[in-house]
Image (cartoon, rainbow, N blue to C red):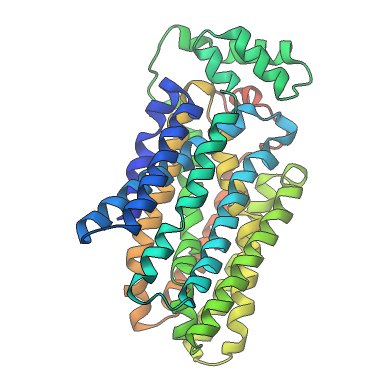
Length: 391
């Protein structure tokens, strides 16, 4: 139910994001997070729990669209990869804290109320998120679309722009078409390449198997013969490595580039996934499972994990960026939901089959990225618009 809400949130967030701005819309989504955590903790029946999970999904989907867009629009080109990457770092930190939180709560002897605490504890970061959103400025690019040019100039200065006057002029020039048409459609021929890039990177991100593995990590260790306690601890280890690798990726994303990282990650994740499938096919060498999954997490974190939200936020022009981000994020979450629902069924007959599929998809991704993906490092959002042939 949360994933269904996530899809709905991702598909609909672009409209309020463009109308009222990313900052204001994110504040509403933060309230959704708080309501979801409280609703799950105090759910009085099954349907109340489902409703609370759906509301939380709306927040997740909307944030995955508007968070990276907001950061990309504020960040200088030379730092944009690392700053948008902070979004992914927070996601990874959240995953690690969730594993650790569940591990701790499960050992507190709370009995039948244990799951309520595991859901309800999410209210703490949700409240922190809401409070901190009242300390950030609106996007300069969004302010220009609202004819608030002087405020946009002040924001550029606040963000440390090297030449705020020149950057402001570039922004104004890049959105001049919005003065003529207020609701340009996204699905047109001239946006064909950005649409292709956004959809495929969102799909491949999930076809790597990342969320199937993270959602069912304890079950994967259990299927390989590990105890529940051992599985919980190894989940924390995998989450820790996810964080470390993501931090490393953020330090090199603006040096090596997005395309290079995706190519490296495609080959690395394919090799590790092939190894995992071998463990399940042979039902032996299970001691290698943890290391193969850790290796997989490392290659994923330094490639798709670090690149996806950065890349989607870079390939669309200002006038349709929020819609484009919504499209890419929607493809990501739709594929996420499909894989989350089908992974247990595929794994029933043989635990190896899903990992074989994921490995093949990473090989396919390698060639798609190699032949079709442009490099975006060090390129301003306005220059990228020209490179993609969009005027």
